[in-house]
Length: 160
Image (cartoon, rainbow, N blue to C red; front, side):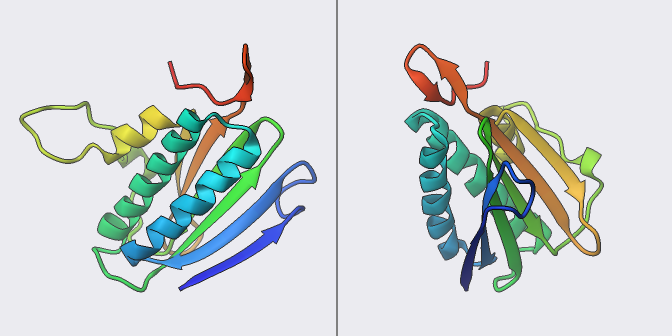
């Protein structure tokens, strides 16, 4: 299930927003990636920065499905995209398992340990990553990608 709504004053007067409600069925991630990519282009991000943003959102949603909901389909995920003049912020809200935010840390890549790189990948793709306990059940993940001015004009740049 997918529901979409737009607003220009839901956070502050300076942000436009798009809310997408989907379920924890992986087939909806393709639709979310497409929407995130389009909003990334609207924000003025470079194609590379848009790809990083889509990858981070995809990994985060896969983690929500796997860890927050234990792989159970049909559970709610709310993605809200906030378009500011200087950044694009994606907030992912789930209603699954709550964990202490400080326990979610990126692992360093280790060839002898398969998997577990999703959080590392999210951090490497985004400028800011913040995990928060939500009111009630679940978690909120805040992902921020800044729009940078460069020699070629507006766009995001890879994180140093």
